Image 1 (cartoon, rainbow, N blue to C red):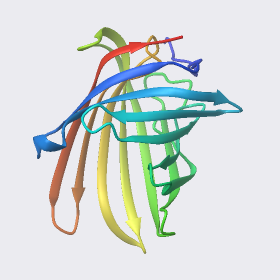
Image 2 (cartoon, rainbow, N blue to C red; image 1 turned 45 degrees about the vertical axis):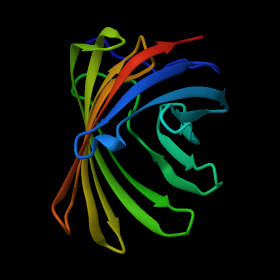
Image 3 (cartoon, one colour; image 1 turned 30 degrees about the vertical axis):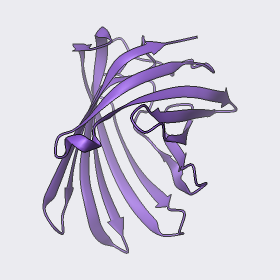
Length: 193
């Protein structure tokens, strides 16, 4: 079975995505992600909302595992170890688990328990085009002080040719209120160096 290897990313790689919030259209926007640094096993990106021009910095390990998000104010949330959205090489049937501690700028900690499964290769069409992509399904249960505060699932389609996912469908449930949230993120266009 063909597998997807760790992507070789470069400073200047850029992805424009459309984010649709299915509960509140006012929370829908387009965002531009650009790599500003990629060395020593770390990928640093700026993420700019085209609606508000708000820019934040998001850092990953070399496998697109989430390490940190920093707001314009300097407030930073850290993830230890990196939150593994992907774990290369990717191939149908691969699974992984992780326990990740998220530490907010205020010092509050939440624990993510992640379970991931890689599905089949699929042909997937988004505004940026049609791609051959691997389906990756991740469940993420989040606790704070041993109390479950969120149950989420991300279904994404990773396309090696783009070096990122071309579509992500996020769903989450607040177990205290049963409130459900759903967002869809689709690739509109991209440029790779």
